[in-house]
Length: 233
Image (cartoon, rainbow, N blue to C red; front, side, top):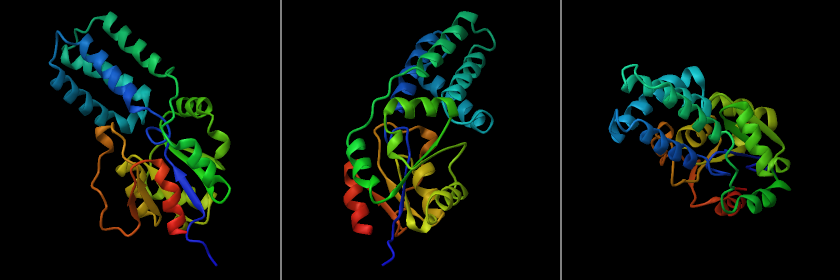
């Protein structure tokens, strides 16, 4: 009997470990540095606009975020931002690159339970060095049969990854906290998309819930992934 599922992909940031909280804390620090030049809401709006413009140039991750903060600081001060503030922004970026890894609940036991029966693939986007650092510190690396660090997550990405490491997207599932990056494109590639909401999600990762797709599922936390996988087969 042919199994419906042979390969399960997992997102990393805010699916396996905390990530967005460090960006929010740094945004708070950034707002304090620029408090004399812009109101918090206006500064956030300008920063998001900069990130949206820059993601195609710098990619996803802390380095692009830091450059977007510097660009925003220059904009809101009309080029008069003190060098000391630029230095503080750079220091904040470096601190983010050193933050400790905090795995989310149910991660280890879920991966351990699935590893014996399915190919597990970590599919994450962002800066190569930073993602490798976080995976190494998490202690989860040995549970995965393959790791793919990609520049973006599209239907073509998932088609390629699940063809390379599995039996194609049709017999694969992608689990993650981002509808835009983890769920919708995986379904478009022909796979299953499982949405695991996180309390903090970057605004650029928001998307419409694909409620009409028969291959869409939503679970409260990773602990519910195992029974879902068994249900699907």
